[in-house]
Image 1: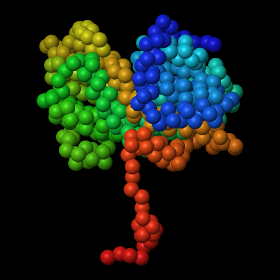
Image 2: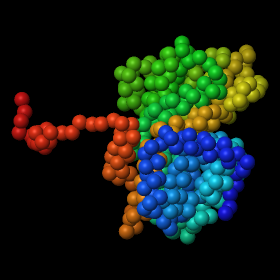
Image 3: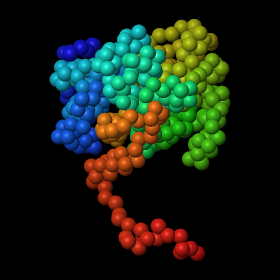
Image 4: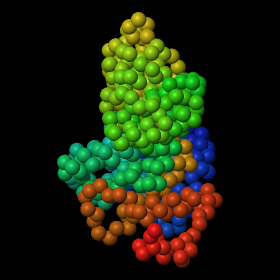
Length: 418
Ligand code: ADE
C-alpha cells in the first residue's frame, strides 16, 4: 500500500481525535454501520481530495466499510492534520497522500498519487482533483462513473467547466444539498472562523468592528456569530439581494473602501479574488487584523500587502505582521488561507456529520446506477437530503408533528378561501 504522510508515530493521537469526532457524527455512524452490512460500494475505487481532518477520517472509514478502496489527498496544504493521516494509514490501511504545509508542487503530486488507484468515483473539495483530471487525456478518467463536490467554490468551478463543455464526467453538487449548505456553510463556517481568529490572536471580539466581506451562507453565519460575541458587524457585498438581506438582518452595509477605515477585524468569504487590496490596506487602522475564510487564498491580495510593507515578521503562530508607511501595522492570519481550517480544526463534527452523510449517500447512489449518468452537474437527489434531515433530527431526539387527514386534504385543495 502506498502513502505519503508526515509522521506515522502520531497514529495513536489521530485515533483518539477521530473517535472523539465520531461521537458527534451519529448520522454518518448509522450510515457506516449499514454500509458495513450491505457493502454498497463493493468494487468501487474512490479518489478523495478533501481536508484531512478527523471528520474526513470518519467519512473515509464509512466508505471503506462500504467496500470501497479509498485513496485520500488533501484539498488544502494547511488544513492537513498529520495525526489523522497517520491514523488512517497505520490503523486502517487507507492510502493517504497529505502532509501539513506541503508545497504547491507536492500538493499536486499528492493529487496525482491519489489518482493512481484509477478511481471509479472521485470526491473533491474545491475542484482541484477534477480540474487535474480534466487536463489529462480522456483515458485517465474513462472509468469514472461520477464525482462529488463538497464546497461552494468547487461548484462554481464545475459550472464554469460545464458551460465550456469541459466537464470530464458527471458531477454531484453536494454543497447545494439543503442539509449541507444551510448548516455546514452557515453554522460550521460561522463558528470555526471565530474559533480560528481567536486561537490565532486571543483577541476579545466584544466591542470590535468586525467586517464580513460577502453575505452568502458562510458570511451570514459568520456575521451572526460575530454579533453574538458582541462585535459591531459591517457587511460588504456586490450583489443587491444579499446586501438587502444583510441590511434587514440589522447589519451596516457599505463598500469595502469605507469599511476599511473603521474595521478592527476583516474576514473575506466571497469566493472571489482581490476583495481586500492595496487601496483598502492603505486606509486601514493601525493593528487591523485581516483573515480569509473563503476556499482559495486569492480573496486578500497578499501580494499587494507585501509590496506596501516596509517590514514583516511572524508575531504568533498563524499571525504575520506587516509594517506599512508611518509604522502602521496590519496583521494577516494564516497567510490568507482558510483561517478556520489553518488556525483551527475546520467545521465541528456535528455539522460535518450532515455534509458527509450527503457525500456517503451520494456515492451509494452513484454506485447503484444501472445506466451511465449524463455528464453535467447534478443536484443531490432530494430523497437523500430528506433522509439526512430525518436521521439528524432523530439523532438529536427531535420529534415532529404529523399532519391530520383534514390538514393533508386542505393542503391538496384550492376550494376553501376567504
Ligand atoms: N471543511 C470545513 N471543515 C471541515 C472539516 N472539519 N473536515 C473536512 N472538511 C471541512
